[in-house]
Amino acid sequence: MAQEANTMEQAVARALRDNLDRIKHTNEELTQAVNDVVAACSSSRPTNALPPMLRAQTAAAALSASLDVLSRFIAMALQQGPRSPFEERITQAIGLEAPAPPAVPQRPLPGVPAPQAAATHGAAPARLEPVEPPSYDLEPAPATPSPL
Image 1 (tube, rainbow, N blue to C red):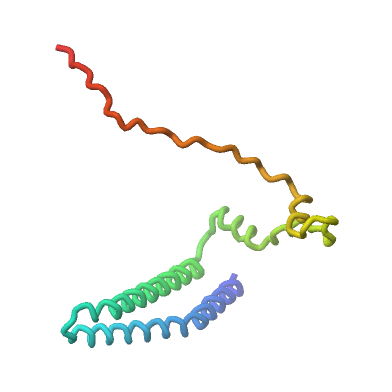
Image 2: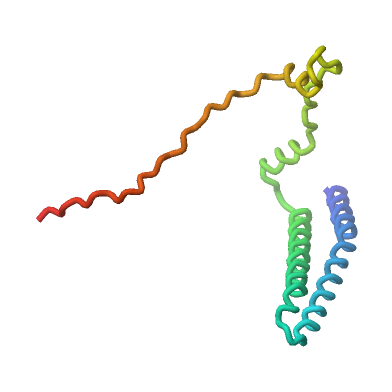
């Protein structure tokens, strides 16, 4: 169990190192955008502040999302304790290989273009029936007299 925890800690550390440069870059973009907002606020036209403000909001949202994902990843990866059976099945399903698609014949049929030749060997496409749109009665319902 100690070896598995050590491997997990190494994987978490590698993920943090891989994402650190992107987080730094996003932080620098946010700092620059905030500085641009401050500079634009000194302008006599309030509309000059809108583009830097949108840029700052975008960078802040990206930085927040990155940090949120990383913190959740760390919390889940380093969580000790029993795992649910569903997590075990999901882990096994992710490790399985997807089945290979069926092979398409290499030679097209004579006189048939290549895309149509591949389609003729597969299953016939389902026939779609036209559907009538529902009609809505826009007339108000007649008023019913109230019993006295």
